[in-house]
Amino acid sequence: MQKDIFKRLIADSQEKDLSYVLDRDMHIPVDTGKVISLIGVRRSGKTHVLYSIINKIKKNVDPKNIVYINFEDDRLFPIQLKDLNTMLDAYYEMYPDKKNEKVYLFFDEIQNVQNWEKFIRRLYDTENCSVFITGSSAKLLSKEIATALRGRTLSYEVFPLSFSEFLRFKGIKPDLHSSKSQAKIRNAQADFFIRGGFPEIINYNQAVFIKTLQEYIDLIMYRDVIERYGISNTFLLKRLIKFCFSNISTHVSFNKLYNDFKSEGLSISRNTVYEYISYLEDAYALFTVPIYAKSVREQWRNPRKIYSVDVGFKTAMDYPFSMDVGRIFENIVFLELRRKAEKIYYFKGKYEVDFYYTSSGKEHILNVSYDMESPATREREIRGLVEAMKRFSLKEGSVVTSEHKEIIKTEAGKINVIPLWEWLLTG
Image (cartoon, rainbow, N blue to C red; front, side, top):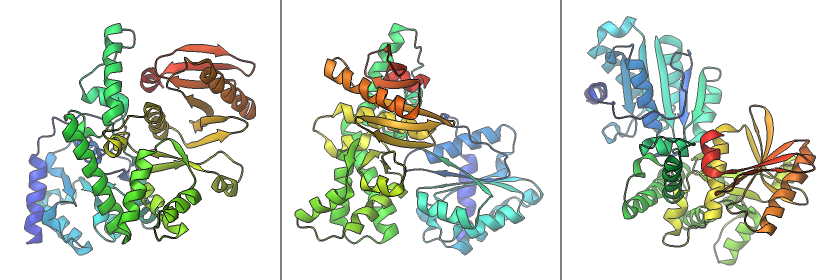
């Protein structure tokens, strides 16, 4: 019975028209001799990245040499490790002549199969194939990859749409020199602030996209945290999720958070708060950024800044309250850095700088200020960057703003002030 199901799934996937799939700004190599793993939050577009790879392969390969299986398909539940071999048998029964040809295997949300890595390891060692896998858990995949698949895999993170991808999915071709194009870009940016970059919802009306985002949050909470880690205190988890997504781009002391929950009468331990935050990070729903410090101990003594994987989650949690544009603005900058930077911190000396990060081995400092019209705000942003430029011996710093653009010369070097939309499209 299971074999027949696999045959149906394989045949359906090979007949599926994927011409509608739009490419993302990701370069995923096809024939590296490694297992390619894509990791990211649910609904971020991992499946469509697989579809893009399949489209690329189809240009030179017989579609019958391509197998795609989604392990969240209810027809496969409950699936076990032994069933994976049944899947392989089903394929070769369908196409016995393919036994001597290279086969491309795509396994979506493979973490649903316990001990999946043993099967992937055997495929890698014994079959003539290229393997692509996706998963929604950083910890589970990294742990299993680090043991059974060490040296055999290349991992890539998949996020919701970047702003450039958002424009592409909206059918907008940016021309930075055209006033008409700039107007379209600014209008799209305002939309991006509210709904974020989950591919499915970018053209939904307001009521539908908010409800869909709320369902995404519930899906992450139940499937990736409660079920995966056996959480019993669901009320606390919901409170924590509400707090984090409503307070993006802010400093959070986990000790203070614990004391606040305790003062509300919640029966919890300090470790519970740390654990729940780490579970949300493992599910790629949340990120925490430490202060730049010479020791890990000093980092842990200081608050961390929290950011959401998508600014739409703030809309979903706060609606119909105010947008809090400044925090959304900073979260969008963080997500762009998270795609490109190797390490990200915030810096605090006498003054604070939003981001100190390394990209392509080079150090950078950057402040985020939605509006620099106020002389006090302008002075604050400049003096923080000047202090950090001297601290790290850098000759340049940047401020990302809403509209303002200029180059400011200081005693420490120059500060580039650039609008967000331009920084996102040219950085």
